[in-house]
Length: 241
Ligand code: OAD
Image 1: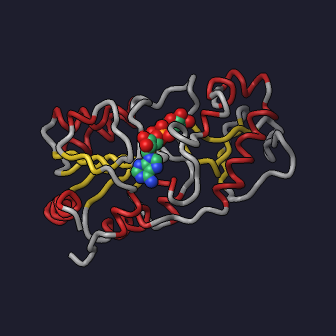
Image 2: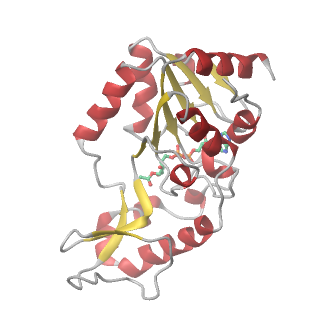
């Protein structure tokens, strides 16, 4: 165990309450592409053309084809050592996971205290009657329609031209106010509001550890940056505490 990972281990052991922000890098070792960086999804697809309500209304089939392609990849992915490690910590500590990932792998690993900030790719919401359904399967007909009202279904995720309710942000800020440790795992720190939580945690004098293969814009604010694969780091932790 390196000195930096030993600090992470000690901080986890001595913290009563932990808040964790996760991003696409956490699922990279499960075989799901990140959005940015080498091999990032957005290198081939323009987000404004796909993850956008206006585009969806104009071309629901194109947007759905992209989501079904992603769902197919995610369907075959398994949680990795980071997802499982966080779930094991939850059995011993007060921990909240705030994930920008829509893949549902934290839940699959057993995490319960979880906020999926950008939604869940397995959920649909009807744009007419707002009925929400969750099913881990691919759709037969694209675009799918609502079994209750025949309205158009959309993925229940947050798109670029949409906002996250303020009450959700307030709830997370409140949890940060009362935590001892804030972890930022595998996120580029480029998308708000998630990117602001780490800075907020520092303003509140919390100990902040970031694990990311790359430097991030707010790096210099944090107490510790571990430049390793997050799954490998969690694999090397000792959970017998
Ligand atoms: P990004 O793809 O922007 O960033 C992933 C980060 O993880 C990068 O900084 C990588 O260097 C790092 N990384 C990759 N593999 C890693 C590994 N194994 N261990 C540690 N770090 C690793 O993903 P997010 O920050 O999650 O939003 O992106 C935020 C949001 O932008 C997404 O939720 C999505 C996207 O637009 C919406 O769709 C609304």
